[in-house]
Image (cartoon, rainbow, N blue to C red; front, side, top):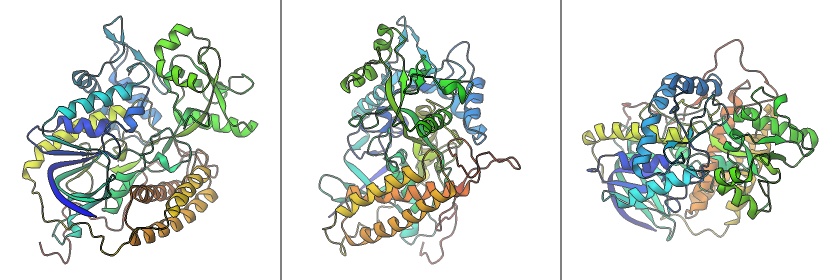
Length: 544
């Protein structure tokens, strides 16, 4: 059922730290709409436990943060991006404090800083062990009070509307089709600028620390609209998620290891010292592979994380949320090791952007996990993700504020056409394909890869995409179908990028090429869609 048209200056898809951070820093004179698939709070930001990295300690420097990030990124970080993000870090923290975020402090005054993998100093600002929740709740509260921001929870974007689809001379983004999840009606929303703040695609894997909405929607929509994507092979697996059938891969923050927690085999033996001199504080790719290796070597279903040598008072005060959650599942952090497994956690690649979040398509921006800015390279350093969301939300806001008054809003857009589709009587196809996708991605495109595994995954995803396209063409859309379509597209992009990289680097480890390139410098893996048209390209056959 198609519904009314609407128009805004800026349409933001996603309500995490990137999306809401942008909305709050745009000019109050602009009309802004924020779309969220679930409640406004339901985002990867909300579940982030560790914190936000910034060089704030007197013993620390921005240069040290830069070098740690570059080292962790295994030669693929863009230095200009890294320096830009880290230079803006302290201002981002101060802005959050002004928005009402209450960070943990020492003696009620100085910000308490912790340390995580890859960092050479304590530089993680946090709010106990629920930093993301504190940030998200503060930003939601602020946006709800803003008179120029329209909030639309329980809506999902179907696709972007581009000038190429409407017969105009030069391509740009004109808006998006939006599905109301409650009544399955479709809005046609026109906007001068559309911003993708939709997060990553870790739901492509069986085991993930991400919420259910992490289905790569923005990446897939941008790809279909003609934008390049890069470095999708670099999927970060968080080393430590709670292993329990009802825990749904509850993430155990890296900050536990920053405070002295040890990884152990079922026998109680420590093992990380055998893989890296930094042991438990090695970057996530090294720790995740070490755990995966040991699990396969001894045939274990899980390994263990032990912080019970710390005092009970310290554990309960520093990690209250994790302590409580573990107790719900029958584990006591203060007395025993807890079972853990790695799980898909972060998409380091995404839609290619510049330093202001601008994509290949004029009028379309991407920020946060949906974007590939060059900050993370081949492996994201812990707690640089919320930093990226905030820094690039601010950069995009400045760019949009400066440019938007020169942009025209096109209100005569084609409405969503459902005249040739029917209600589905085969919903089982969607659930079956969803399960198949997540299982073969875990089995063949996981922590350790081979050419043969990637070939198998490529064949399966191509067949899956054909089935989904046929289904999409014949039946009315649902949110489940849209997410499956987007996730399958992202899975294909991940596989294609992984097949292209004939080396092991950062998060991409393959048994067929276990060493990094030696004969040449590493480069980004860039995929170019068939309908790619650089900004300013004239579209033949258009009528203006």
